[in-house]
Length: 188
Image (tube, rainbow, N blue to C red; front, side, top):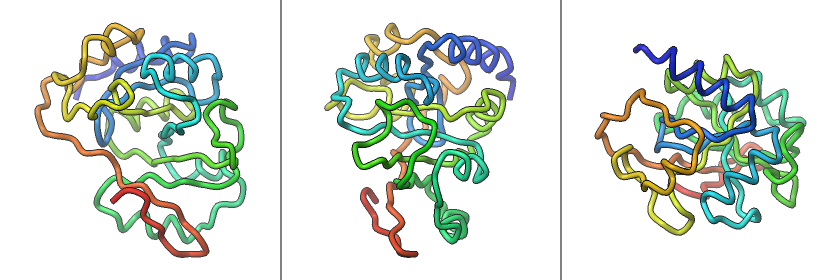
């Protein structure tokens, strides 16, 4: 797994407020610094998506959730460790994110990412990274890199080379909300 050059270039673009196109533990994502309002606005613009629709954020571990969410239920982490499919959780009480990323009710959708490239990038960047499917809003998510439209590829500041040849059909994550120690499935 030689992705060091991709990591370096992504870090440069993310620090400059730019957009990256990168492989995640699910579908390819359009990413940016989740704390940079101008960068988040560029994602909405590229996707032609209403900023009323939330975007997912990736973090490398549970510690980051404790840093960016006020008072999460810690029993949720036990549930997440049992999951086989990547699982995104809608948390109440988002802290420190770009304002245009947080839902009106103060919630944020976060996934702990285990994919080696993403995890490495997240740890090196030391901030959450937006991850939204690499497609125009309303279009189907691309199951692999070759299915991503030229409009999206041209609209970002850097396209990661790592895993471009991977033809395994990717699926979006499971999306849940954790309410009073119980799982509410929003997307299976």
